[in-house]
Length: 125
Image (spheres, rainbow, N blue to C red):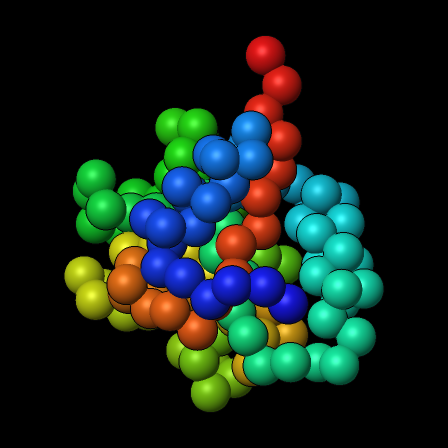
């Protein structure tokens, strides 16, 4: 599925290819990304996928790298143990990941977590 890297390294990886980490503003785009991830991960390898969301600037305010607010709640954000809604890691988790154990719902993790591959999108000017 690709090289497993930190969130910052994932941004550099995407930038070197003319893009940045993926963002989405609606359920249709999110579903397209999920379809793509599942099509390339046909062996169901347990790896997370970095996306371009963070709350590093202000704890609890999740924004995309574009500055737009991230969508919150279902159908985007997952849950821990099936009941505790994400994001749930407070200051320990400031970067957004599509979490494999939760069928690629969005979770917050530490930005230096490395069992993750980037999902890049092309930047068009």
